[in-house]
Structure formats: C-alpha cells, structure tokens
Image (tube, rainbow, N blue to C red):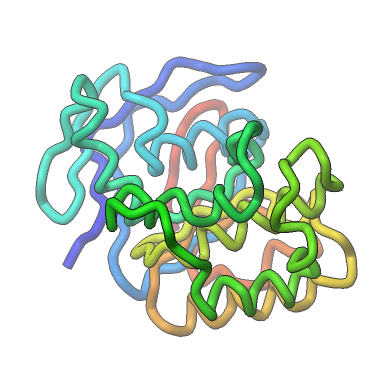
Length: 221
C-alpha cells in the first residue's frame, strides 16, 4: 500500500531555497530515503511538504489513496497524527510543561484530562535524561532537553511515517548513539522514513535509496 503520494507537486521558494519544481513522489512501507539537497531550505521544504505543513502551489497529496483538502485544517489533523515530523522547526507549546506536551495528543483523542504518561514515554524520558524535568516548561530547560521531548512526542504517537531533519544538531552528545539506534529499529520494522542529515558522517546511516534536490529539481534514485 502506498501511504503518501504526491502528484505533480510544486512549491514556491522559501528562505534561500529555489523551491520545488513540479515532481511526483510516493512512500510505501519498507521505504527508506536519504535526502540530499544543494540548499538546506529546499530539503526543509520537501520534508514540510510530506508532513502536510506546506500546501502546494500545484498538485495533489494522497494519504492512503485519499486526496487531502488543504483548505480544511481539521481534516488534516488525523493525517498529521500518522506522520512523525522531526524537522528543525518542530517545537513544543511554550506555556505548557513537557509532561503536558507529551500528553496533548492523548488528551485530544481520549477526551480526558486525568491521564498519565505511559511506560513507553516514561522509558524514553529516562533514556534521554528528562524524567526529572517533565514538570518544567520548554523555556525552563536546556534546548537539548526540549528537543528530546519533541522526539519522544513524535516517537510515541503511533506514526506510520517518519520524517527526520538534522536529528542530531540539538541533542546532547551522550544520547545521540541511543537515538540513532532507535531510528534504526524504526526503519528495520518497515516504517517508511525520509531522512535529511545534512552532515556527511550521518548520510549513510539509514538510507536505502536517495532523493536529490538540485536547483529545485527533485530526482529519486
């Protein structure tokens, strides 16, 4: 089954990028792509497009065969819940604690406010060293701790697709190896992934196929 399909997609430039000229792309279970781009902003735009965070200038987005309507924000929410987006701009809600940020998805789905973190989330909090910071707001913890909370939120929401951008930049060095192993297990399980490292040392860690963006032209090997 094809999970994500972009047909004749095109995006205007953002930042210092060239934008994305009309292209088509599909992502299915078992797929793993390493993303390469001559401009960081174009790699970022490509991931945001896959995450439904950037409506296209042209083209159609299909999730499990159903075309998405970008004019209806609420109808995009169930799709976004199935996509783990670990872009450099993925953030937490600033006026809520880390704990509340990790529970927000469940508050919405289960319609309850008296929820506790599950064992998977708590285990990851211990792994990333933020268990004792859960009742602090993002501004009260170090950037690497806030980034860890974003990762845990995305890892525990039951996503069917992982989109990862420069995953190691804002992580504390002691947990990088553990995080790499976590992503490797996700890919080995067959969950499709598009990964932009932006650093040669990490480019070959996970990829099975390549996506190249040059002067706004998207090519898939």
